[in-house]
Image 1: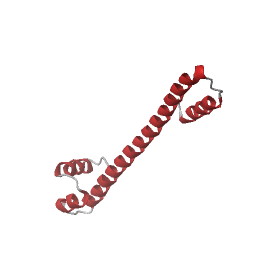
Image 2 (image 1 turned 135 degrees about the vertical axis):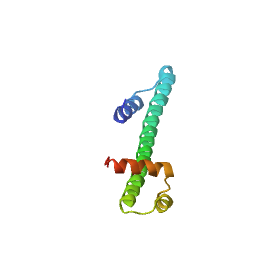
Image 3 (image 1 turned 30 degrees about the vertical axis):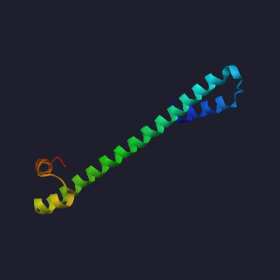
Length: 100
């Protein structure tokens, strides 16, 4: 279910007349729908955070590549970007093989 479908289902459930016989079923269904909505929102937030993290990492690598192309010393690049020597060596290999 997507967020819109869950919201519509919530509205429908709330609009139904609830008698004592249906009360328990109503409450359980309502709880399930709210849980689903919360899960969707949490998954969206987690995906957004993961995307930001990947974007930052790619940005740092691109800055390191630009610094390598400019001829800066490896120690300076590592200090600024916080990349390890191994990560920087990998970027150098890719740069020398024209992967960028």
